[in-house]
Image 1: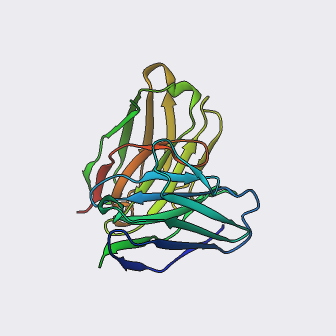
Image 2 (image 1 turned 90 degrees about the horizontal axis):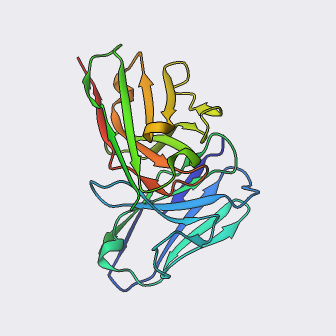
Length: 108
Length: 116
């Protein structure tokens, strides 16, 4: 199975700053089938990005996904208070689908 | 508005069984692949099982293979997960999620606790 590694484990930033989150796969994700979710405490995950770079319904354009091969990135251009959460990447290129361990974006 | 709501969780003894349900509304359930994903306390997300729209293509995580059965009732917009031989490692919040690759909508989750 494809193992996803996310870095950093924790990102401490202030509102208005730019966040760059990394997701690295143990092998090439040939179809670009990478998704990103965020999860606020006590809530279910919410889909942000699918197919590496397509924003899900209702997701603002400050969220941008990019990457190819085995290296993928989620960039949040200007952090809003509601963006402080845990972020997970997921690959659905090969079965079983797998998730990364998460990056926590916390208020500095 | 898309809604997914899980039920059937609770406290169960090791070795016990549980049947989770998920009722869907706000979209064409019968045309949607569905999934169960779980999250142990303080941990990350783990995919458990998937079923295609017609119920004929099913897959399970190795951790649950042989111990759970996913099914659906398209007439009643419902998804199920029958779990047996539960252990403490199965304690988690279980989410039902819509989608055949990425998971576009999630229910609020239901807590399953396996403890004596």
